[in-house]
Image (cartoon, rainbow, N blue to C red):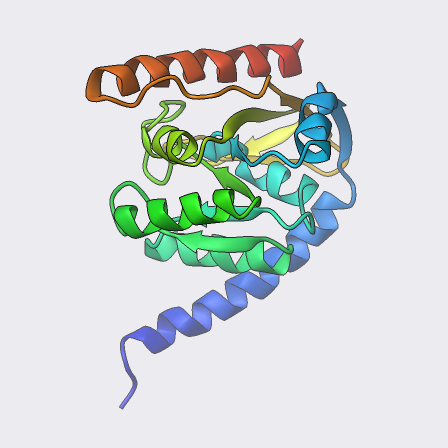
Length: 216
């Protein structure tokens, strides 16, 4: 008797192979312009732990650009996160599974451990379900507990497809010019209920500044 998971497993394998081939073909045509790269370079040269904070809709070009750099990425345990997780693994990323709605406590512990071990962790603070461009507190708590910096990073493409999803997920078109902009590395000040809300707004503003830089 066929189990209910078999059709999804078959579909997942097929979609992963197809998606990986398409991403490899697309990604090799993208032309990257990088702004404020010294922010990333200085963190790495000083061996400081930090969190890449990126919006969920910018995930694809940023995964491609940072492939094979030993970054650990937080991916949702939802079913639609499974394909992203497998694709990220194929691009050389380490994985932490969880989100603000599922596996949150376990994921937070894992993030803090990775940061304390000196690794770089990438988090989409508006994922996995939105609202878009809103900074959920998980990244703030992890950064404060591990005494790590948060490094805002955004991507803008001059030509891209946009999915009809909550995050308007961006897929740069062939030969698109993709601009990546890093904000300034920033420490979290407070994560009390009131402080976390204020810090979330502060980091949303930092993300907006990086987006303005990339769009300029």
